[in-house]
Image (tube, rainbow, N blue to C red; front, side, top):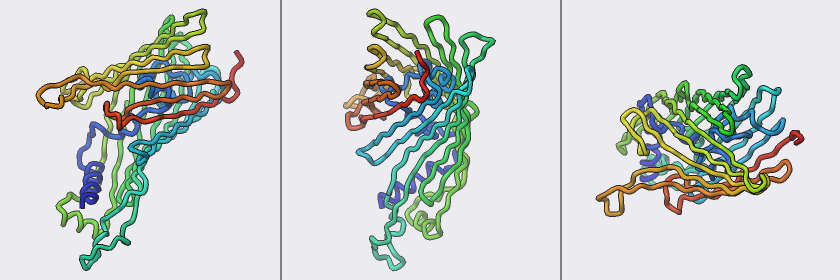
Length: 359
């Protein structure tokens, strides 16, 4: 019965009548690449590889080769949920780069107990089937250098979103991200508008008459077709790299300011209309081969154990990376939700350069 109630809750949330959902398409906010996750997702300004199709498409112009491939796999909640990412980007000419990214977040083989009890009221475990809950997206990205304004790059990503809950229902969604970077002396500034046009997910459901009767009998609401809207988010960033010790050691620091406009959130700055969350990340490299990374984000107010006051919490992240010829292997130890050690995950990602430019 608990599983039935959980299924009903999931269906109701996804297919409800609410038009604007504060946490719609949240799987697209997890992040990609262990490098970025280790830096607490502070990456919209300094990103310079294939992952820019996700973080800030304007950053694709900074990739150091003709073709670049990116891969990442992660598992959450003791392997229950699996998160996969793959991407490719190619330089079209000296002023433009195109890329494609694929993201999948899924929970597979979920027991379906809607038909557990037969028409005679008997429990029959052979009637249990399974289904998958999958969120997936394809991002088609393009970036171009604006020659009339020195140091300015612009880029965009068109998003196709597919979300599916077994045979019960699913949605198709479409949206657009727009990004820009601007180099000024030794600084790089960036602006990234996620879902800048609003991302619209059109949900439809398909429940059998028996399933509807089960929902009604157990007091659960029967979901109906609806359109879910993800409202825009604006991320501003600034980054700079310092070279020390005869240029053997590089020190990169970046700060991002995540602005949301969907009502009050538990962030550092919050109003009824606008909320802002700061995140910071750093990367220390040695000869461009070995890297150590760290970052702090998810700064929130939380109730103390006694429940009579609030305390400030934050999410620390750490990671490392190694680059050898055309290969870059990165690792991150990051929390997906709060500061509970049980939610920390090991993330590995791989990047491959093809037709790398000679130095």
